[in-house]
Length: 71
Image (cartoon, rainbow, N blue to C red; front, top):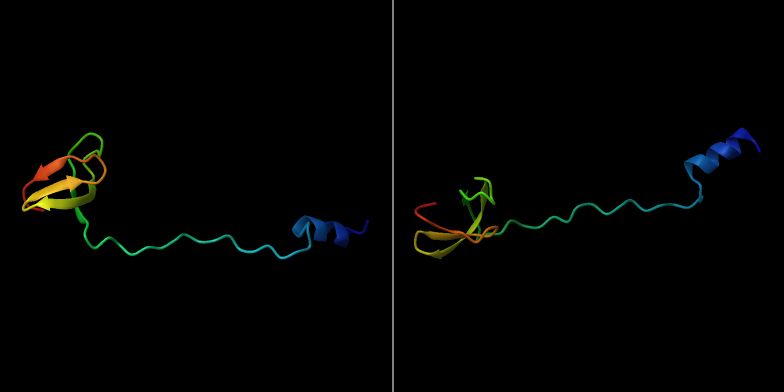
């Protein structure tokens, strides 16, 4: 077998076009989410998404803990 033929089999073993893998799915940010720090051990004091459940009361979407006070 010629060296060129061996090289072709290494570079493109099937000889067919392979489609590019799909990229990440991009979604719009949630307009209703409020990003504030969550001070529980599960969330590790990181800023997470919260939903406003009442005036000045927010529920974390990760640990479901209710936080009172301003955002």
